[in-house]
Amino acid sequence: MDFDIADAKLAELGRQRIAWADTTMGVLASIRERFSKEKPLQGISVAACLHVTTETANLLRTLKAGGADVYACASNPLSTQDDVAASLVEHEGIPTFAIKGESAEVYYSHIDAVLDKFPKMTMDDGCDLVSRLHSERPDQVSQVLAGTEETTTGVIRLKAMEAERALKFPIVAVNDADTKHMFDNRYGTGQSTLDGVIRATNVLLAGKVLVVAGYGYCGKGVASRARGMGAQVVVTEIDPLRALEAVMDGFRVEPMEIAAAEGDIFITVTGNRDVLRGEFFRLMKDGAILANSGHFDIEIDITTLSEMAEGRQREVRPFVQEYVVNGKRIMVIAEGRLVNLAAAEGHPAAVMDMSFANQALAAEWVAKNAGSLEPKVYNVPKEIDSEIARLKLETMNVDIDRLTPAQEEYLSSWTVGT
Image 1 (cartoon, one colour):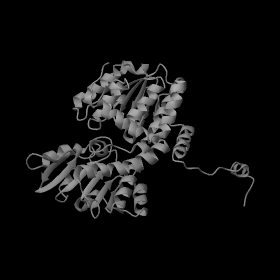
Image 2: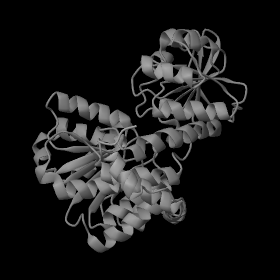
Image 3: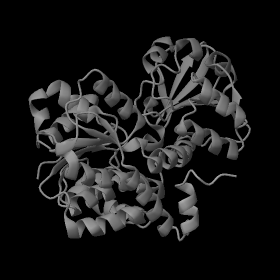
């Protein structure tokens, strides 16, 4: 089998950790059980460019149970869990191309490796796979039935492609499902981002001024969890509605030019570039800690920070680089890459259960409907979203009310007034 992993000897550890994650991924487990019987993905080859983690492994197992030929590569050079990659190869028979800390050159060679399998379906986290396919392999695009996209940044890129009529096959925006962005982005990112910061630095959040750049669902989660741990949270935003929401949620909202001088810890979650840049580095306190939880490593302008630094940067702890600017130390975690996956383990499995249930069911949906879909970005069908929420409540032993016949009639009628 063709693959590229760090160390096959880690496979048994990976299998144990994948099994541990599976114990809190009940929705995906129920889908996998059905898939193993019905084989809705039979004969379909899937190229999955995702974070190679324990949770992702359980998604890939589900796709394979559904009959798919699955090929996996990493969607970020620092997010791979090497033991998981080894177990996928050794125990699941899934060709995997992922090594934690791989260079940019190796990263793209791994994407090319899964594309060399001529997939009929893509499963992306950040749009690098789809972008590579469209820009470098245009003759291969016509062989792809459809794809799915996991994250906000990827959906933004895909919608830009659609607007320019550059997108050549349909994509389902899994990220935009309510059971994904409302839970994964808020509860998952909120917890795992702070987990990454704390693991990397051992910093005490209580009493610190923590600046959250961006108040989307990810920013909401980070801000909420940081406040819960005693931090004084400042939010920066460009969107007036989101800024207003942050104010009404009780957070101080300031432009970055003010927050830069006040913050002890900075976390970017915007999906944009140069959110922390030269003009702000000059204002920061000695010992300021910088982390990014947006998908790409361009939210913190590391190139400019390196140019501004006095002397060479040094590693002061694993995954923590120190830069000195105007005699003040600035600490950057994980080279500005996804802090929750580079310095920790990513989202809790119980949250990824819903996200990856969406991926599995979206894959089944596009397999059934690809022939009638146009080359554009689609939302996850509402019935899939609702079913995942229902199944998740069931795994949590939570029951809810149901409408009475009279209530159903009232809600569907316009004749009954006050």
